[in-house]
Length: 497
Image (cartoon, rainbow, N blue to C red; front, side):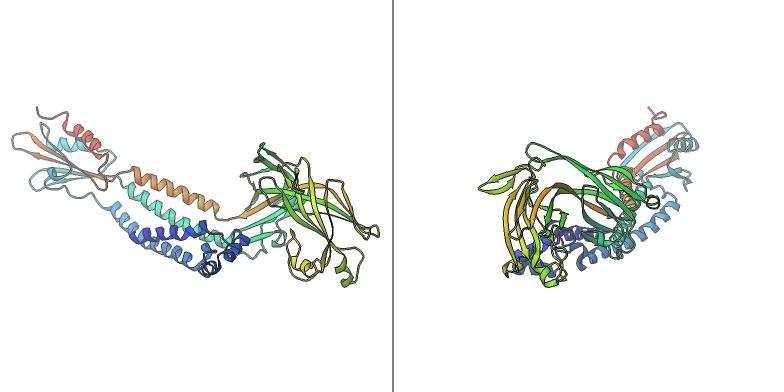
């Protein structure tokens, strides 16, 4: 038990870096920024796995040793408890006056009557009546066996919790996806549908629980200072047999009120805005895109992003890379101009506007390398392969005309929502073991293991000397009142003047 307690302390200590330092599994960009900002110290922490604490070798080692220690502690204790349940209460001590609680009285009853009264008074106790060598009779009684049972339940539940959490890390998965709130939908059919996906150790992403969610609209209310008061998304979903019949069921998705499908939970994490731009090319062809832009100010939802277009009808790869268009800049849901710079004064969609730079040239989108949807590759700008051809602030309906006749219009804006899908097949077991820990701890704290002995010795003159002694095995707190109450039942009614 001492080893288990030390390992439990070490586990809590080992978890502290996971709370104090950014973790790759939760926020990879922030973890990389921390490493870059702290130089050799950041690189040293990275080598020591301080940015992957819960998957590190040293955290796993403490976790495994704690499991082994608990098993080694509980098995012999369980065997001892099983033996104690079958054992009879111990013999009555020779001198009961040496016990912490004791009383003696001379009664007019016979030893047999005293033993009968003791059996009635100690109903519910485990007791054994014995006859001693000098003709005296005694009763050994014991109560509170459930205390150790509660202690064992607590520790076995802790052991089960450790196993359940470990299995959960192996078979769970968690993914985030952004969905435009204008009828767009997301289906949990594979990892390609997610913007980010964190699988468990035994999850390859090929056997996810199938379901679909369609986001119809999003509503938010804000306090005057811009703080969010509440927001909710009206969604339709289908799972299980509904997928075969194409049946959609409505649901109001709110923060901390997830949609629960078969095996998965869908959470509403956040929201933002997606401007809609239409590009009319010189030949009259139009392309329209609504792409989410990410907030750079979480209070006012001032957002930045990049909406990228490929020219239609251009089959020559070299020529196409000269005419690709990106619309980058800032979007303000409630526009405010400060020193000729667009910013936002409130997160509500009251007076939307964009400040855009129109870039033309090679966007690098067909280079085979991945790139952020929120920004352009600055190295292409520095090398001159991507140049700015216009800069302007636009309200909905505003149009920019480029030098080659291309027209870019800002058509409006729709909200987007960020959804998180969490799958943990052991969450019910974790809950059950956690409840078991609480119940076991409550039983072990409230129940006291105590013993009581009664000896009736005839004095040769027709009277009986009755001695009562008590002992609390673990803690005497509160046992004195119970002892005196029992002693009064045995000695009080017949106590000699």
